[in-house]
Length: 321
Image 1 (tube, rainbow, N blue to C red):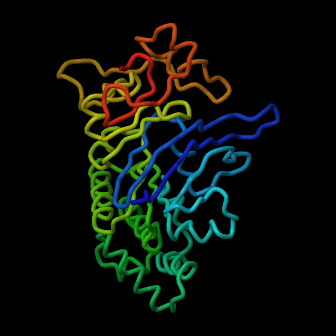
Image 2 (tube, one colour):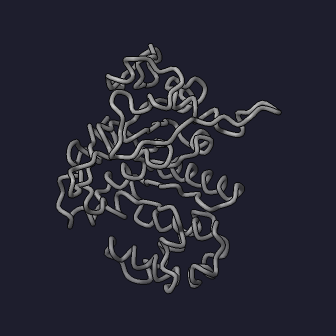
C-alpha cells in the first residue's frame, strides 16, 4: 500500500544577493492515512519551512531546490500554481499558529466558512452553511447555529482555535498540517485541542503533521516523532522509542529540558548555546558546538541518518551504534 505522503530528499533554499542559503537539507519521511507525525525542534530548526514546502507555499526568496513531495503518489512540487491552489485547503489543510491572524476580524464565521466551501465544492450557499455547521459540531462548538453568525472577537481563544480546525476540515482533507496550533492557549485548552486533533485523525482517517517545539505535546498525540536541527532530521522513529530511549544528544537535551522530567529539588536542564543561523552552519555535525560528548569526527564529517542500534528509529550521530 502506498503512503499518503512521501517527502524525499527535500531541500529548500533562500536566494539572497550574496548567495543561496540552505534552510532544509535532505529531509526524508513518510506518513500513512490516519497516522500522526510530530516534527519538533527549537526555533530556527526548519520545522515550519518544511510544512510550508509540503504545500508549496514558500514566500520568495524561498524555493524548493531539490527533492520530491508526493501526495498519494502525485508529485506536488512540480505542479503549476493553479493546480496547487486546488490541493491547498482541499486535499491538504493547514492550521496556522495564531487563530486571530488566521481569521478575518471583519467577517463573520459564517462568511469565512461558506466562502471556503464554495471555493472548493460545487454546492449551493445553503448546503455550504450546512457543511459549516456540521464541522462546527465535529469540533464540539456549543450552539453552532449561534456561533456561526458571530465575529472572531466574540469568541474565546480556545473557541477561535476550534473554529480554525473546523475550517481546516471543511473539504474533508486527507492531510492536516498543524503549525504550533496551541500557541498562546492555556494548558487546559491546549490539551483539549490536542485531544480533538487526535480524535479527528482516528475518526476521519486523516494524516496529521504536528509542528511544535514542545516534546511533551507530541508525546501525547503522535505516533512518530522527527527531531529537526539546523534544517536536518537528526532522529526519527516511533514516539515511544524516541521519548523513552532517545539516541541523539540533542533529543536527550530536549527531553531533559521538560519540567515534567525533573526530580523534586533538581535544576532544570538546558542545552548550552543557540541554534546556528543559516549563514553560520558549522562543518560536520551542526550540533557539535553545543554537544557535551562530541569527538573529533563530529567536527569534520556530517553523520548520516541511518538505523544504528534500534530498528524502530533512525539517528544522525557518530556516537550512536
